[in-house]
Image (cartoon, rainbow, N blue to C red; front, top):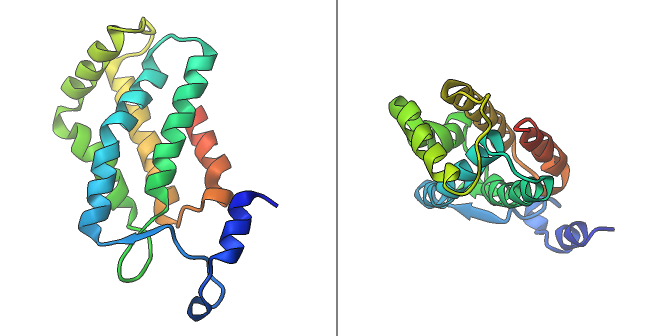
Length: 165
């Protein structure tokens, strides 16, 4: 039995009819702040995964970091219902508000930052990076809105990150 599963079995409330407690149930404003606080490092790492040439050990390290940050977002629930937000809630906070109408300029700025440390793949165009980021965030937003669960969805999250290879 995994440690996480054991903790979930221990931490339940009878008035929730055996349902495990969610890690965080916060006001929408607080959830928004948590997501916005993680948005920049997540998106910069995603751009690195899409556009930078690096050893597989470095790539795997970034994937682990991003997976942890995304899992932190995924387990957040909104008060008073302890339900996740809608797809648009996550998508807008992670992608649309970060890149929006100026996505080309924002992605170019990210690429310039990444290129100071890593060489860039010559075959990646800005519009292709933008589309792949959009697709990634749409997939993650759907995972969150469906009620992300660390145990059940960790593999799906990893598969989503693998689409960036």
